[in-house]
Amino acid sequence: MSDEHATYGPPEHGVRDLDDAEHARLVAVVTATSVHGTAAMRRLWDDLVADHGPEAASRVWQEALASSDVGQT
Image 1: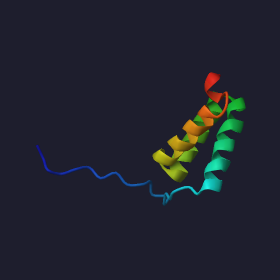
Image 2: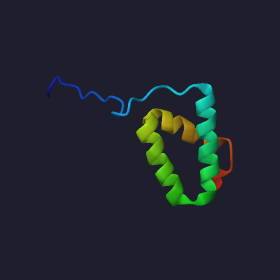
Image 3: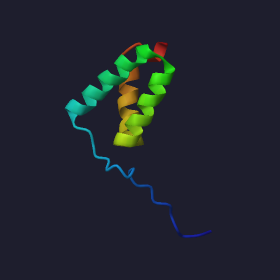
Image 4: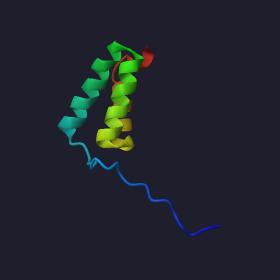
């Protein structure tokens, strides 16, 4: 086995942590986008990951699902 470890960094776009206001705004965007169907949600997910990284996108996504009926559709 090799002692090398894969290093996973943020996407090249320069990911940063979301502040509270931006997090809340993105949660609202996810919630609002949900009425436009799964294709719109997939595009939004891809945009969130590209712009903010998978961890931030996941936190926003999970909060939107938990705070609305998005997950029920």
